[in-house]
Image 1 (cartoon, each protein chain N blue to C red):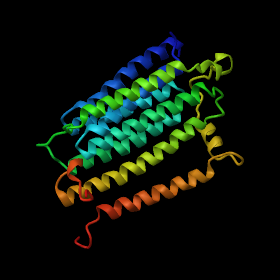
Image 2: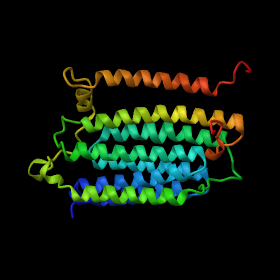
Image 3: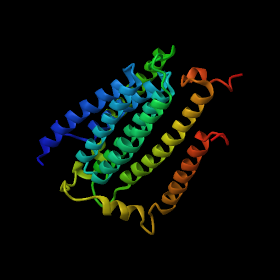
Image 4: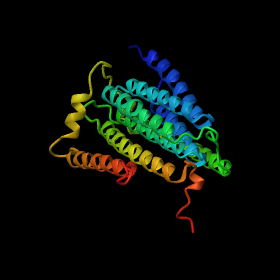
Length: 176
Length: 105
């Protein structure tokens, strides 16, 4: 794919992602907000593809748009407060000020940092878009010397604990 | 201007701020959780962008590995968080974060 095609794709995806994230925050209807959140997740997956992260894009669609999206929709349907909607509480002006302050600070730091000194000679190594990253990720993850084998095992224990914890939390005690 | 690391980092910052605003200002606990997911996604974008631009060698993908771990923790967090919200709703018939004040002195 030519370089300016990726540029164009980035701008389109950026507009979709930011507008759907804004809609998640601003919409009164929680259900529509959740559906737009799933759209936002798909946009982030597309963004990963522009970054040559094909494995992460697939995982993003499976885990976020699939699992977490469906989980959120289920939770909204189980805790339906349609008459209340999705309002802001009374401290939303300080929250907005804090978020804007953080945004301005991060943008200032990002623009003030000279990133080219870090990437030797400012060159990005040209990778072909169709090279799969899956096997490289596996190599990095399970490398014998400086891999991530222990964090990987801890993550599996965390998932098991979350699974059991969620079941215990929503179980009705001995009633059914 | 060609696409660079700054574009991705600023997009990530915008997403993070939107998520932070929602997480701080929403009353519906499920909406707060959705905004936290937006924040985690923003961090993931920054991780993958760093992995692409600062370490352009395809064999060094530490940023993407970090993003995978963040996704794992986010999935666990969403499952447990929604279970807690459903339990609160069952006991108090509301998901308003201001009314979940049993521990308020």
